[in-house]
Length: 389
Figure 1 (cartoon, rainbow, N blue to C red):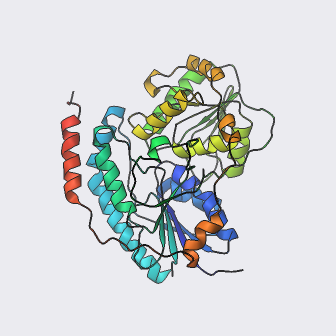
Figure 2: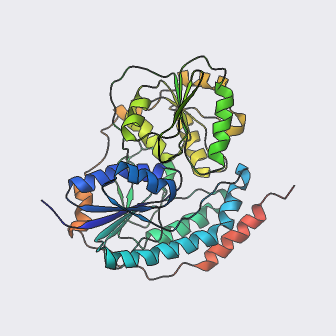
Figure 3: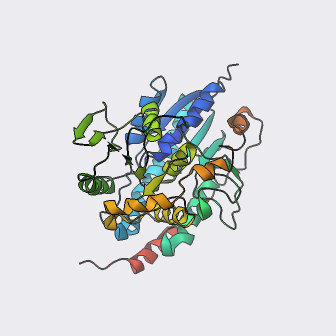
C-alpha cells in the first residue's frame, strides 16, 4: 500500500560510515511504501546517489570536518572549526524549513546532522554517541550533543540495549535523561559463504589528511607481504578505478555488493575502528585488525574495548608494522559475538510508526544553544593545548 509520505534521510559527511549505515534504513523505508529524498554533502552524498540513482538528492551545507595532521592536535583543530560547524547547523536548519514547504517533507531521519529538527513534522536523530568522549572536555561535549538531541522527537541508537553490545559506554551512559530506542546494529552487508580470495583486505575511509597518512603507511608495509591483498582506498569518485602493484590489487571504492563479496572472501580486514565499520564486521563475523584514527577519542576507545574483550587487536598508527598482524591469531574476531544473538532488535516497521502518526511527537524545546558552554569549552582546550614548536 502506498503511504505517500516523504521522508528526508540525511547523514553527516564524516567519512563514509554515517552514509553507509543509512542504506538499510532507506531500503526499509522504500519497502514500507515511503517516498525518500536523500540529503548530505561531499562523498557521503555521492555514495548514496550511486546506491540510489532513482532518488532525489539534495546538497546540504558542509560541516567541513578535517583531522589535524598530528593526532594530539585533533581536539584543538575541531574546536577552532566550531564556529563554522555552528554556522552550517544554522544553515541546514533554515534549508529544512524551505524543504518542508517546497518538497512536502513529512519526516526526517538525521544521522548526526544536528540542525535537522522541526517543530511541525516528526524528526529522528541517529547516533551511537550518547556520550561524546573528548578527554578533559567529555562532560562539555556530551552536554552540547544532548542539547541538540533534545530537539528531535526520537533518538535511535544503532546498538543493542544489553551488556553484549558494540558501543560500550558511548551508547550506554549510566545516566541519560533523553528517551532512546536501541534499534540493533545497522549494516548494509549480508553474511555469505564464499571461497577465500585475499589474505588481507585494507578498508580505508575518513576525512583527510589522516586517510592518506594511513594509506601511505600501509602501502609501505605491504610491499614486502607475500600474500594476496585487496586495498580499498575509500575515495568515492565518478568511476571505479582498479590498478595493481605486484600482489596488491588497488580499488578507489566499492559499491555494496562488491564490497560485501570482497570482505566475505578476505581472511583478515585491516581498517579504522569506526563504529559503522565495527557493525559491518560484526554482521559478517569477520576477523580484523584496527588502526584507530590518531586523536579521535571515540575510535581509540572502541579499539581498546574490543582488544580487552579478546575480539580484535589494534595498534596506534605511528607504531604499526606488518609484524603486528601476528596478534590476530589469538583474538576471536566477531563471529562468537554474532552467534550470541539475532542481528537487530525490533523492526523498522515499528520504528516507522512515528511517521505514520502511531506515536505522539515530543514537545520541542525552544531553548537556544548555550554559547557559554561553548566559550567554557574553548577555554578548557586552550588550557590543554600543546605549545607551538
